[in-house]
Length: 328
Image (cartoon, rainbow, N blue to C red; front, side, top):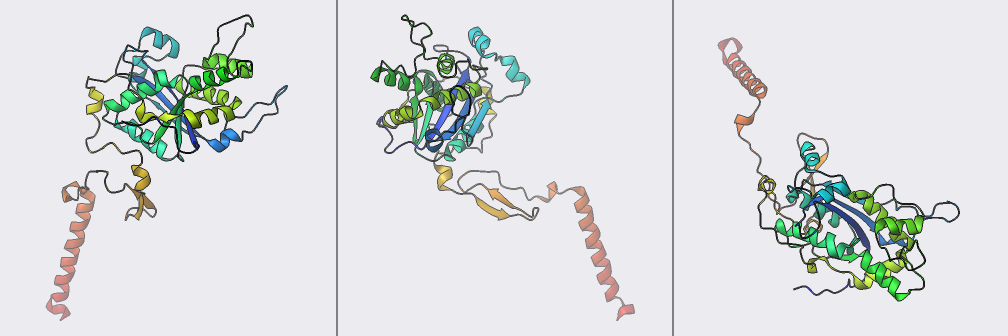
């Protein structure tokens, strides 16, 4: 059992995440889109500002790593989810999208291994939805969790900061000053700070962009809160335990095995030169199984076979000719 302790030192990389899925609990939803944007602490603490009137606004960070993946959920969307996101099972089938399989796991693992630790996964309402759902998908693949990764929920952070200073109202959006309900939705928060609604909502990538834009408005307070309140991702409870076996998982090549999140950091790639290329080629480190090369001559093209036979015959004829009495 892991202790839910905050990071031992300030977080260096914040990975903003949003998921789109087939529905809400208790329908045991499946992921349809996953989007990750990695932003460094330095970029959040030192934003660039526009020259807009009447108030400058922080510009979106330039140096951002992004991973956006569409995933065939292999499960029907609920009518409400389809109406909100515009996603349907037919769209994924027509575009030949694969399910949440080992390939997606390897992409996510490699993405996190590129970032400077400590790393914190950030999502809006993440503790109630995004984190448990991602944990359920990872558990289905037999992968325990994102080891050494922390996570933090921006809704929890914003409510906590608002409670500390109710007079300031840092995050809540109250269009009616006479006791309207506090709203922490992404659209409402974005309107509070930018006086317009985001152009696109309910796609994973656009919601991540909206979340980062809101985060930048109170970055220093949020960063400080997350340094003290982020918890290890592997302490999150999965939304559900999957018992069904999906056919798309069985199509995954057997020689691809799950990789520990920190494995790629311990095993650097080797660069070797090959006979068919003038440039070095990266080779996977030992420990990741791969199919051995097939050196059987039966796979040799017929043109090469014929050329070798011709050369061998010509060599034999030349040798016999030099051995004849005429050349003695």
